[in-house]
Length: 258
Image (cartoon, rainbow, N blue to C red):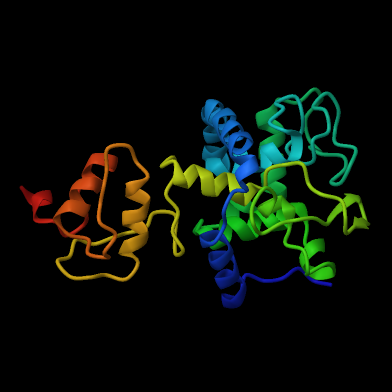
């Protein structure tokens, strides 16, 4: 069965799930510990991001899922770097001589997935590529379970997983924090800013309500020292909050020309 395409319906599903995603209370501390650990190695993820065009947080989330953030393992599947991969995909990287550096392996893994051809890393595209990295078995053969590769530790996942290649259990439960949950927490903490339509969303200064501006205001309220009324009016106060957070006013703010 062919892999699903990123249709409008699937994109909307990803948006709805992401917006309604909540970390399970008993997993708060573990999720934050995971995020802190990933942030401590952000420079390594950014170096691979520069080579592949994939966002650093996308690479970091995969690293956590595939090897528990172990830099002595292949990004492909968690096999040791001192040999080519043994598990699927086997025999990677094809070029070079072991032992490989983590960066060499990560570049090969992401190139194999074709992520360098992705031109716009929207929220939907990030989640689509993450689900595809793990495989489409949940969606195609067990659609009653949302992939724990994305949603484990959240309100969107209870149980059900592959315990080995091709071996399914309805009662088994993932013990890893899902990649979408990691990304959601990074955004909640103000470390990244995602949008439904692109990697660098554009919001405009306005003295009237503008659709989508509530999401910007909610995001800004998660940054220390910023308190905004979530009213959808991206005016003076919202623009000042953007200035405080990012160093520039909203596009269209007269103060940009001052």
